[in-house]
Length: 152
Image 1 (cartoon, rainbow, N blue to C red):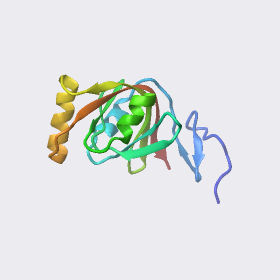
Image 2 (spheres, one colour):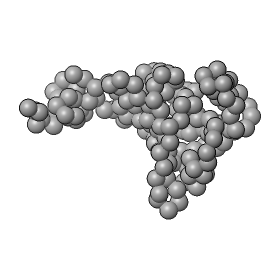
Image 3 (cartoon, rainbow, N blue to C red):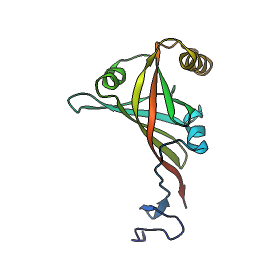
Image 4 (cartoon, rainbow, N blue to C red):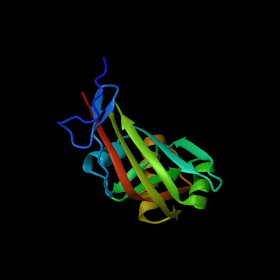
């Protein structure tokens, strides 16, 4: 039977998840653990965007990575809906997860780069991981982060 408590006294700010308590914290910067997850090539990564009419789009982006505590970058490899949505509304929610650990970052597009240090770093990473060339690198400023490991 699932316990009906709303708080785990051992974890401040926790919420129940099928009887298992999940730690949630919100901050404006990525923790080391969150950065490690976004940079883990074996973690699953997705980005959610919305167009100017409110139509949602979710796309898998294996190229997502954190370049510092306040910046997430993804490389445009193919397709165009994510890029078009970001150009229109500038907002994104990004999730990286592996096993029982999930991190979500929300942020605002700062722009698309086709050259420079960030582009070069993204291009090198994508070439090493997927043997593909990138069109551009989207730079997203992190404004909110939540997540962590599920506690059992």
